Image 1 (cartoon, rainbow, N blue to C red):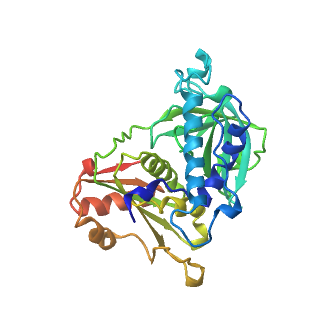
Image 2 (cartoon, rainbow, N blue to C red; image 1 turned 90 degrees about the horizontal axis):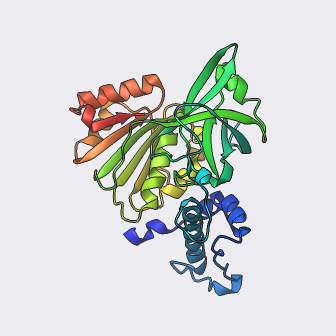
Image 3 (cartoon, one colour; image 1 turned 180 degrees about the horizontal axis):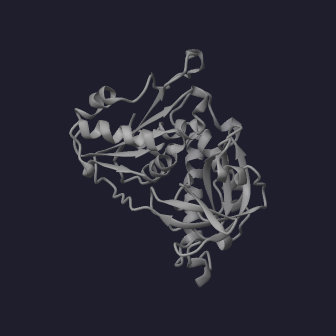
Length: 329
């Protein structure tokens, strides 16, 4: 695939941006959206790019430009007061934020969208997380979640949450409805990303541990000048556990993105889709050794359950890596 194709979004991405498109297109203070081509403008000969491919690309660029206008204090198209320049959350105390949308992926995997007042931003770096708090019996129950929305998004952020049957926080989250409020503070996390510092980032994730990986992948692919190669290895039990596969399918279209799924319990190969890179089994030392041997100037990122992270670090150290070569979220 040619490097120039990295900016081409799929229909999945346009659907993901649809809510922003509707909101921004109604704002008279923002640039007008691109004009959609007529059906008759497509010749039907399979041109690459097609006029509709160009339109989708223009929409993605327009949405990104609208985000920039809303978040930039120096843009003449938008008057921003001092209050808007302040981050929506702080490290010191919890902020009450409202749920504006709930997207149910499955019975126990849900994406929640939280509204940020005055078109504010979280002001976070890629790989950082927020802390969700809930007051109960005089104490504060907390959990960490990494937003999966782009870090330059203004007006809202999305979090991907797994509901556990007997989880203390899950009992509270399970009751959430649109319009409810939750307490957040942050961002936290010491991961520092610099474009092109490494030739490759290898991402080892299990289950919902894919959240910080998606955030970083979006950050890299949004930067036309970042040529860092990304290799995500996502471990789940079953194919149906790949909850954010639509977003991952979109990301793997970029020239510098490789995504591989490791399924530990799946028996039904008929579910697999064309183009999926799947290995049946588990991530072990032998699996990683093959991938690590030819690499140079790379970093490994790890996120998952405590046992998963412990195993991955053990395999990496056995392969000769040191703490400087990996980062655990």
